[in-house]
Length: 327
Image 1 (tube, rainbow, N blue to C red):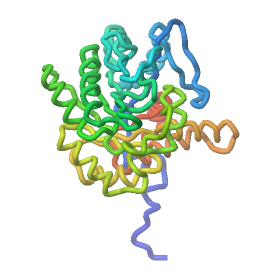
Image 2: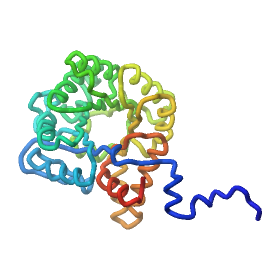
Image 3: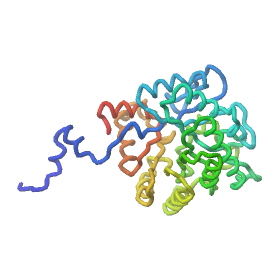
Image 4: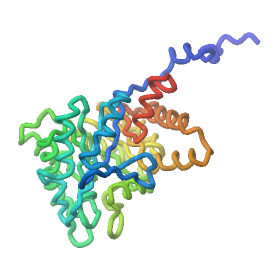
């Protein structure tokens, strides 16, 4: 046949396919979520997240060394305190678990970029993401504690804060609090489009943060809604967010693209615990090629418009990028 247009011409060798690749992935854009807990000499594997651990500060170097060796330079810390209370006071305590972990990493691993999750759910005895008024989360009272937590994290060495609570107005509250303390250069990565999702199940085991009653549907988003997602993103941009996150990743790639198209700041997406757990379970049964699935999932997020990818597979992806399996 006399075909002038033959798209297959650009697919006939690996060198050519890489030359014309539309989506480029760098290990510099990967963020690894890491769980740190109170106690001594513990590295506890998380049953629903095979290969992921909770570390005490005296054992966290094991994972920090592996991240450094893999070339992953960005770490987001989630704290698991020994003591929880209704106010979540260990979230903003100067000697809280995240604060002490930050001080350690700042001193011993200065090449790692330190990001912190800012929320109350890991620290409250009731497991909700803020201060309660009866059985409801008091939005405006919670803002005060979120701002206090963000400042305490930066005081301890955080270089970026990432509020995940989904309270209205929290980006403005945190921005004002940081600026008042002279931290005008600290960026905020907002969990702006965070859905009430069943994909978070394993994380709640990992962090011990399942609600003691009810659910989080009054503050996390309804997964049916598209326009509301864009509204949340644009509100957070107006309030001073520097990076916008869509969470989860895999089932919400349409919104990664839409948020990318309606904003002019970097977009992050979080490949959450449920995604990781499903891949691990299927791979353990021999049903999928784990490495190829991980690469395909990551590429889909970047192709949709993500600039930053938060993933429990960060070390593996850095290796795959080096080996040319993705990137």
